[in-house]
Image (cartoon, rainbow, N blue to C red):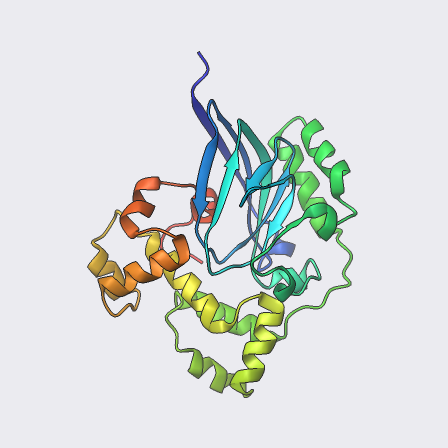
Length: 271
């Protein structure tokens, strides 16, 4: 008898030439006897989902292949029976550095690959579907990314460095110190950073801190997690979780939803 729910996840190591731009690539196939609805919390990676199966509904709109920009809120997804896709998890600097798309133009939005990368479109999905193995699909995606036209507008080095500092600190670093170190005004930093990344430094730090803290839910007491990740107290942590995930820490833990981190096999504290 076919199981009521089955999910297959296959990880692919990032090509050396794409490191810093691509956090990881995952092949996913999910089959369910009943519709699957999920609330996806905010995250620090940008998913480029290359589908070769049924469409996925995001906030009630059906998508094939798509890119979801950074956001400080959650989103509801739904599919009827099956999902088959290759998920490319981009770092925030890859938006302008690899795809040539300003982060502010995709922040809080879902864009179809047809609109974003018209050279891929439906033909690319057909190629993924006709591939005989995950390794063939990974090779196709990787080759396409490596051959992408280098007509890009990469983020300034200080923006890249600021992203790195925020991630390394788990979102707890003082943004004012980063601004001072940059030599630019706070207004200029916020505007330029968000133009390339899609969020301001403070917003990105908030998402990363929530993300790192939530990866420890169910492993350690909430009060201890709050202290480790720089929250004033457990109530402060809970408010942030509701803000970014749309539910309490207990609800988020009980849901056991797949995230970018679980898909990539990232442990708490990893970047």
